[in-house]
Structures are given as C-alpha cells and as structure tokens.
Picture (cartoon, protein in one colour):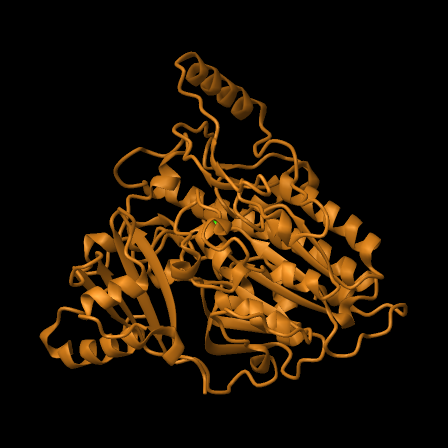
Amino acid sequence: MRPASRREFLAASLGGVAASVATVGLARAAAAPAAPRGRYNVLFLAVDDLRPQTRCYGCAKMHTPHIDALAARGTLFLRAYCQQAVCSPSRTSLMTGRRPDTTRVYDLQTHFRLHLPDVVTLPQHFMAHGYHAQGFSKIYHGGLNDPQSWSVKHWSPRGPGYLKPATLAAMRQQREKLRAEGKLSRTEVLQRDPKTGQPLKVSRPRFRVRGPAWEDPDVADNALPDGKTADEAIRVLRQVKDKRFFLGVGFLKPHLPFVAPRKYFDLYPHGTLSLADNPFPPKDCPDLALHSSGELRAYSDIPRVGPVDDKKALELIRGYYAATSYVDAQIGRVVDELGRLGLADNTVIVLWGDHGWQLGEHGLWCKHTNFETSARSLLICAAPHQKAKGAKTKALAEFVDIYPSLCELCGLPLPGGLEGTSFASLLDEPERPWKKAAFSQYPRGRYMGYSMRTDRHRYTEWGLLGREPVARELYDHQSDPAENVNLAGRPGNKGLVARLGEQFRKGWRAARPT
Ligand SMILES: [Ca+2]
C-alpha cells in the first residue's frame, strides 16, 4: 500500500476539511563585463548528505574555508528545510519545484516523469530561455537522471569509491561470493518511457557489496570521484565561459562511505571530537519517528543490530567531518575558477546539501526522519548584486523555493505549477518577515509523517490513509532546540496542539509570506 498523500491524509483525518576567503578566486578578472542584472549564469552546487556542518554555520571545529567564503559573499540560510530527507525525493522536489505529494516520488526507485511526464525541470527551464545547461555527477539520484534537463549528455566521474588495496580485495571477494550464490543482482529497469526509453521505475537491489564506512587513502584529491568532478567542471567552465550557462555540479561526499584523502582526516586529530550529546530518542517519541539506521549498517565495519559503540561513533564523526572538508576543497576549486575566468560578477551561485544527517543524535545515523537533524540542511545563495552580502537569515526557507529564486535572480519568468516562493528578496533584506512555516514529510512503511516547522515549534503528524493520525510530535525550539522531549501528549498543550494542527491543515499555501 502506498503512503497516503498529504491531501488524502488530511482529507481523511480531518473529515474532509480542505487541505489544502579564499576570496582570491572571487576577485573579478578584467575580461568579461558584468551582465545586466537579470541574465546571470548559474553555478548550482549540490552536495550529497551535507548537513549544516560548517564553520559558517557555527561549527567551530570544522575546516570549511571555501563554503565559509561563499557564505561571506552571499546569504546563509540558517533555517532551510528539504521536503523529504532522502536523496531522490528531496532532489526531485527541488529540481521540479514541486513537493513530494505532487511529484509522488517518495523512494529511490521512481522517476518523476512517471507521474509528471511533461514537467519542466529547473535546468530545463533555463535551457528553454537560452542557457547552456550541463550536469556533472549527482544532481538527480543515481540511475534516475533526466536527459531532458541538460543541453549535453550528463557527466559522471568514473573509478572506485575506495582506494585501499585491502578494501578493494575484500569487496572483490564479497562480490564473487554473492555471484557464486546467485545473489548478485543489478538494478533492473522495470518500466521505461515508451517514447524516450528513459527508465521510469527501477528495481531495488537485493544485495549490495559494501566496504567499510570510512577510509583515508593517502592520495591526491582527484584520485577520488569528487576531485574528478571538480576537474571536469573546471574544464567545462573554461569551455563555456562565453555562453550563458547553468552548470549543475554535484558532489558525492559526505555521503557514506566517508572516503577522503588522508590530509582531510588529519584536520581532525583523534581526541578532539565529541559524540552527540543526545544519543537517545526524544522522550515520549513515537516509534514511527525513529529508524534502525539501516543505511549505515550495510557497511562492513558496522554491527547489523544494536548500538554503534563510542569508538566507532567517533570514527564516523571524524570521517563525516573529513569528507565534508574534502568536498569544501572541491567547491573552492570550482568557485575559484569562476573568479579566475572573470565570471564572479555575473554568476549566481547556490550551494545546497540535499538533506540533513544524524551523527548519533537521537541514537540515529543517516537521514530518513522528520527531525530537525534530517529536515534542515545547508543552503547558501550568492548573487552578484545582492545588498546584504554575508548575512545570515533566520527566515524559514524550503528547498522547493530554490527553483523560483533562481528564476527571479536571473530574470526568467516562472513556469506554472511551482510550489515554492522565491527568496530573492531575502538576499537584499535578510530580516524581512517571511514564511510562517516550512513543511517536510517522511514515509515509514504504510504511514506518512508530515512535519511543520514554525518559528518556534516543530509539529508532526503520522497517519495512514483513511484514518486518524496515529501519532503526533511537538517540539519547542525555544526551550528544547535539540528536540529531546515530545510535548504533544502533555495535557497542558492541548490548546497549542490544536492551534498548530489548524495551521498544519492549512498547509504551505497559507504559510507563504504576504
Ligand atoms: Ca542525499
């Protein structure tokens, strides 16, 4: 049974109530004249599984000079939320400008063109307005690329994700064993678009060969895929510098496994990092809000069940930090090249992590929740003529807003059907009144959890099609920013729950800025 869509869920549960610097590279070289406002290039930087874990987000231990430099010339969104905290649903929502209940992409096997065959994606829209659109590495989820989004064939880095000989040998052995047992299966295409041949539905691989959750080979940056991606993006930037371009550059880290050159691990010496201070589920939290960290457990050095011990937890935290610094350096290389080519003054740069990540908070690893730790992610946008450079805005932003924002910043008309709001005006006025709430969702088995983040609260309902919500969560960010106590069932909060429930049922349309 598929999860209830928001509309169905609300209609059912409500009895039909309508649901509704490194600044070096940024210095402008003499060459290209600044474009008039309205026809900027776009450098669209997508980072897999990057939570707001950089120095510019207040994490003093982090070495992220290039992301910090980008924030210093742009706007950092302190409260930006993805619409569903897992790769493909989040990216699909962002790239189509529509929420998961419209794309109906809730998993990693469904292409958005199954239900929205004619939707115009963000780069496709730019392409229709004369831009050269080119994609590198992970913009859409693996196997679900969208050729219609790009002017030329999408490029992906080649080569293994691990480099240590012992790891590669162990994985080879594992693969041979699975093959001998007849268990090794590739992802299969279950449904194709009859006209384009594009995969619309793929199978879920039954068995995967996995190495350890982290590795620190002593290699150059471009021995690993993200370094190769930066190389290629730089090569193409030089090639397209005289065109109006939309370049989507995706980076695979800090997604598991945390493989990065050793020098990035050396930035975080043993003994200097600490564990999450809330490694337990929130008090009175429904089981539906939680998971068993299954994604992490697939790796060879992680126990299949039970807690991850402190030693391993610290290794994972260190690996995540190192992988983040590795990606930061690749971002720096690409952004610096933009400056060297004299394009800094006529290019909008947007950087986003596709969702948050639990590093042991709530006893959880990876994403896949409606908690702040998963729903909130990194978002930085820098536009050449913005007034408030280096500002940090507390405005509630949603990833579905990125599409209309880039259109507005580049002077493109908005296509119909978008479900976000341009945040371009926040780049000039970061303090202005903004959205009353941000919305995310996450399916759990037959249930869907819908979550609303207001200025002060996070309110979540878990439900099943045709039924009353089976669980509610309420966290007060004023007294409990880590979401450690679910207040939804407290008798004293009935009025608050009712008020938030009412706002929740009015949905994202009613939460838009006026
Ligand atoms: Ca991801």
